[in-house]
Length: 241
Ligand code: APR
Image (cartoon, rainbow, N blue to C red; front, side):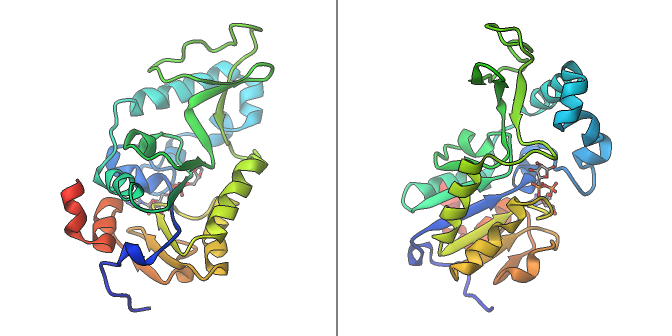
């Protein structure tokens, strides 16, 4: 499709930004796959699944604590701020696979975290708690002594019904769907653009590399997140940054 760029965002009534680890790469946060990806260095079967947590909760908590320590001082980049600025005047929902909290740190409020958050822990008896420190306040629940589980969707986990349904309903209403920095290999998140297509949304992919879902998009911008967003929305937004 030949689309005049920059697009006129005012032409769209319901906009979804669908982000993956590549959205945070310019903030200095790992991606999972590709060169230097987290899973090329660590075996997720030892650190990021319920079996591993059951086997050795302390080892899994230490791994997640190490990852939090490495990202706690990372800051959002101009692409995050561009999206949060656009949110002020447009009906925008961010559906992210990221657990780093960067969109919220940039001021975005309407964020659906499909895969949970590094900054939440869950006690099996006493539920969810926030924990924003460099180190976890505690590995165990103060009330019952149970091991606290990072509130992250790990491999072999099922997504929370309410969250995935909320995301799908939002995408089915979108008339503009912009995917940024995801390899589109982890389901059900990878299926999001198909729902956008069902609603005949304009679908745009921002990723330096081709992905398994690229053919589905009306426009692919082979750039990094922040420059791709400026290509898409024009440098008029640079005043935002
Ligand atoms: N800007 C935009 N995209 C980028 C950038 C960048 N600066 N750098 C890398 N990318 C792209 C890569 O080309 C790749 O397609 O970001 C994508 C990152 O892919 P993954 O590392 O697989 O991350 P993601 O798609 O978010 O992974 C999905 O897998 O391990 C699970 O739960 C984890 O949420 C994660 C899910």
